[in-house]
Amino acid sequence: MTKLIDKLGTKYLASHYASDVAKILAEEDEVDVADTRICYDVMTQLLSRCYSGSVKVVDSKDTTRNAFFAENRKRGELNTYYSSIQKPIYLPESVEMIMRRIGELDPNVVYEIKDAGIDVWAGYTFLIQALRPEIQLRISTGLDQFLTRIYDQLDFTAYKWEEFYVLKGLTFEVMTPDPENYDMFVRSNIVVPTVLGKEPLQDKDAWQGCLEHMSKLLVLYLDPPCRKMRDFLDL
Image (cartoon, rainbow, N blue to C red; front, side):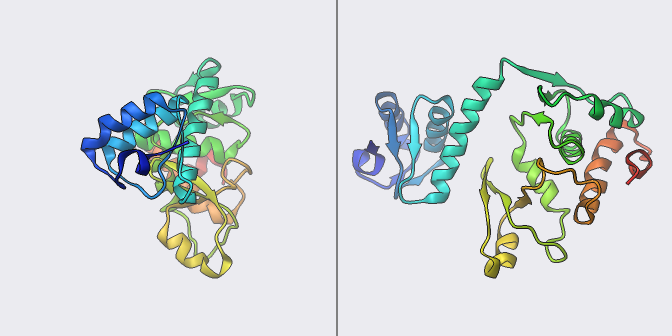
């Protein structure tokens, strides 16, 4: 395995090293970025090759960054696998159709929401996962904004969770915080409990505010006068 710091003779991988890194990636099957400081242009090269699966990128010194590259590689593998079997879905025709459309989704199909702006996409994605966590959704872009919108609506002082999706750049890492540092952990990171996508949330008190807010993003688009989502979700 090639260590970039040894190959290039520096830990500061600034923009002018992008072409050198590209050449190394074209020649190697696995590279280690341990102890390096990576600029945007070089990181783009690394993530592109990592996502495509042509090069395995690791960080033997930084577990967080190593998990970031591993998640990126996994996403590339899943994208290749699911690209041939995924099915597009579109926004419901009206507020009244939301629950019917969600109820019609097949757990054996991988869906991707099409033709939706970030707010309404986030609202619909959250509702599907909160009401029917068994439904498989492909999230190709916007994960950072999706997690941030949910994080902003959760009350981490009134409720506690054991495990979280922790936003890392444009991807996430699953982490379990130290109970003694819980408050600092949830204040210092964009975190979303991993019960999202695993359990139905409509009857859980801790998620009611988030359900109201995220569903309103969808309702505002479908029905600008904005009737309350409770009228249709029976929350």
